[in-house]
Length: 55
Image 1 (cartoon, rainbow, N blue to C red):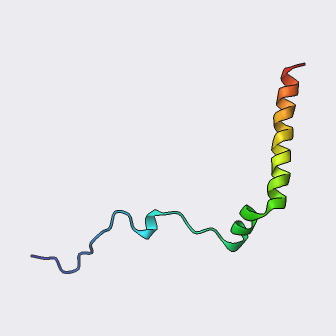
Image 2: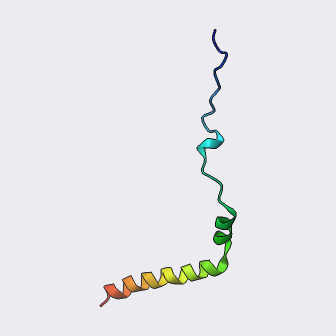
């Protein structure tokens, strides 16, 4: 048998998963000020669509 030199493959190795977020990405995800601003921007976009549909 020639099993020498063959590597055992693992179907779900670490290479299968996504990359780990950077420190800056983690910071922006937890930043409450940015989340509040994005919340109001999104609400304004939705309100423009709703108000535009009622005129």
